[in-house]
Amino acid sequence: WFLGMVWLAYILVILVGFFHVVTAIIVDQVRKPTTIDRTIHLMEEEQEERKLREVVSKELAKSGKDESSQLSEKFFHKLLAREPMIRQLEAAGIYLEGGKARDLFKAVDIHGIGSVTAPDLVRQLINLRGEAKSRDLNLLRAEVHQLEHVMDTVFEAVQNIVDRMEDGGLVATTECEL
Image (cartoon, rainbow, N blue to C red; front, side, top):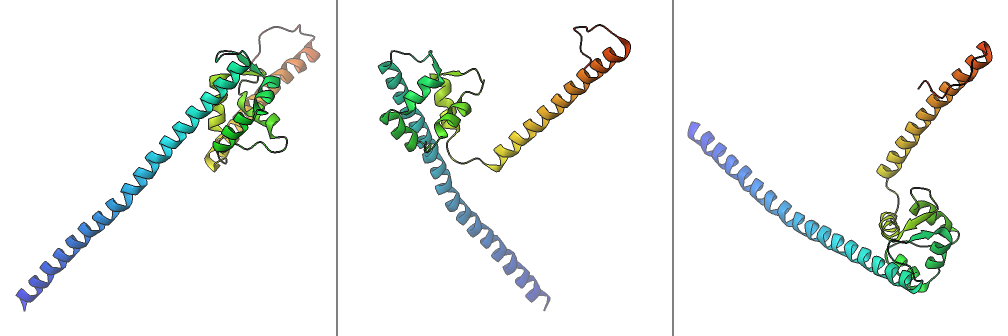
């Protein structure tokens, strides 16, 4: 009777070990295509970026500009009106229907100076592919919240200075109490 229980426990341990090995093999077989798919996807992204960079360089050369030139919003819109650029942007997943070209320049001109260099243009266009992810939106929301807090702090400091000037007839100074 006792040996029968030992034998049953032995078989149970062997079966559990066997199923662990089988599970490990299955998981490994499932992970391999995922890794390969990810590698292929990264290679395709690099190829799209290279093609976009080449098209931008060719279009700049046609206009007498080089990679270091500052591209104005007006030039950017002319660039986007050219068929090779439209095809390459669509291949990269960026579609310009309606009034999106104006919004696209605002998104590409991240410094807000009204112009952008060719490398920055390509980099920002690549970043704009696809749909916004919830993580991106949450990061943006957090940054906006931080900016609101800073603006509130600045507003309060300015308001305090103005109040003191009105109450005490103080002369404005260049220092701000932040």
